Length: 339
Image 1 (cartoon, rainbow, N blue to C red):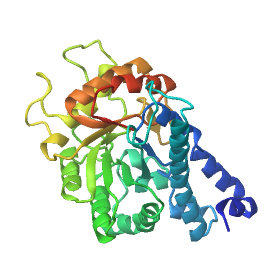
Image 2 (cartoon, one colour; image 1 turned 135 degrees about the vertical axis):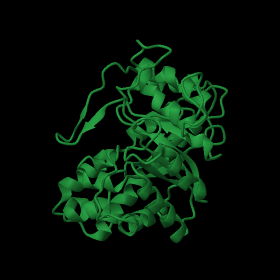
Image 3 (cartoon, rainbow, N blue to C red; image 1 turned 90 degrees about the vertical axis):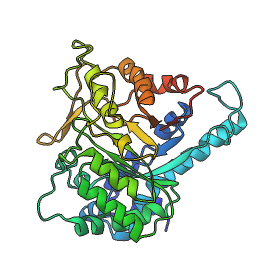
């Protein structure tokens, strides 16, 4: 039975329909592709088999929803290629072909904390009862389904601690996953991930895993406590510093060679894709708006991330249309990948 028929007749059809709606249909993916994105990410970050079962779905139905989240992205890519081939629109002035603009689909895997939905994905504190084997067992079948869904790679996103990075690395090896992956951490200060583990130690785990082809940071909140000694009144500069600090150990006179950084421990490509600077309030279960970060600020920082060594750059939550429209211009003549 096809998934749409299951949804129509399922007692939890409203939940299943809501999930599929949150997958974005094709429109969101197409917006990014039209802006020049080379990688689009499935809306499976918070989708887990355990979560689906808690809503009354069977394991098979949950797996179908996971697979569908990737299929939607793949179908968006097909639509994009079809339009480009027919010349219905063109962002560069020439007919766009697959060779000129390759597109990959990444299947998103969120942390155990994202399943808990208690804010622990932004703290990395899961409690003493959650160990390495528990995390591997939690993610195992989910990863298997996403690998078999047609995705080109797996994106392990917003990793909050070293333990979960270890679980992912071991899982990739144990399951002999045959598509590449990236590890993206959430940092609270540019030196540590949100749990307090050194980001350098976390990056070492990614570097040692053969299946991991890129490592970096995403969904890092604005750091209010940082003052920029070069521009002390530049409140917006505080927002991009965590990413640059994660990438390099020396930036003018601000940082010393002893500052932990991803580039000190890996030669793998570096990825950076922040949100708009909003922070999550776990008690209210809602995002608190940023103060002072604008679309123009975001765009102006892209060059800084490129200079710092990032080769995969993009944006995630709350990224507005303006920076999407400006991204192709920023990457003209560059060898970076846009996501």
